Length: 509
Image (cartoon, rainbow, N blue to C red; front, side):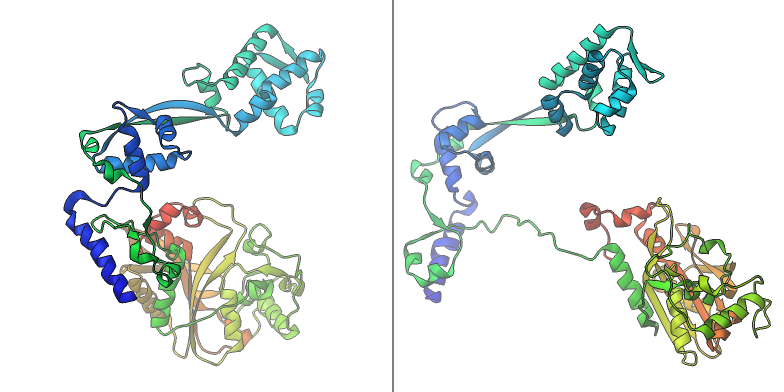
């Protein structure tokens, strides 16, 4: 059966297609009906006339058939456009219930001593305020909570003109500018009017070619199981026409960048570390020798939790941190002085950096050399603007092994950024509470040096209470800042806007 069907398709479909040469594919049934209709008379046919003559109620069918006939040269399309105005959502409400200023003016006019208090009691809050503003623009004054007007007839006339506009909006009405400034009251639209007229080519099509026939465009199992295909007409396909390219899915630029960074770290011999968002202030800050009165620990910078409000920690760990912070413990450091509060250490919070997880990993493996990295979310109470978000990603790397030193750290950083496509890297001295020495990392981009993160070697105050004997090199950076650099953005918020067109146009990272 398949062999017979294949031969039949070749003979009736593809063979016929190439035999017709440049005459293109046969007319569709809607095209035949429309051409048959407009051959009845010369001149322009409007959309309404075509719909009536063809007995259609869907204008999309007529437009599609008209375009098909035009592409074959059988009809000529004429288009005219006209700018008009229609009512928006709020405009439709105003037409049904009355303009806001009209309803407020009617209330004030009906209540001689109407006050702002009366207005607020009879109208919604979101109406009273804007409505008073509109009335003031018409000449109504509000003094000591009382309304007054020197020329009420003029106010009534202006409102009547506005209501007349809402009843029948026109683009040439002088009030158009006023209503354009009011949200969702009107919409400016451009209406396109099409007409079709027969061409000499269209008149020459033989009547026999305009007879509508049933053609099979899809081969189904039911068709194959019967003998109907033997006597059926199959719709030919024009293989010379361009096919539209389907829009396929792709990774979000942020996810693509994460995968790229992950592959670089893995290539450099690092292992990935993933851990919890919810941590204690002790691991998040005390373990890193950040003093308990540091500004970064305040409520305006950290998301402290109500549930869990407290997370119990090992008393010995708290005692070690207390000694380190108050007088330096056994590290020959003087500590921060003051009094260390174990209750503060046990507060629950959303982590402010991924270092809280790497330091716990090191504490659980104090004698095992490692190279680990993390790419994960962190949280800080930041005001949203073009360079700050309250939730963002941090990239972190840690090297702990005998002999780890500053030269190894700088070389690793330069290797990482070179693999990212930024061969020019420099470091300069900086300060961080938990590293000494500390560095800021900069890369050259478009002729300028940009700071992308911090680095350093963990202080003894960080490592010794946890039993860590080997030096620990650490560095971190913000992923979003790196993404802005890679994608050439100047606003961090663009990374999280669901703009499909922008996403499709981004390079594959």
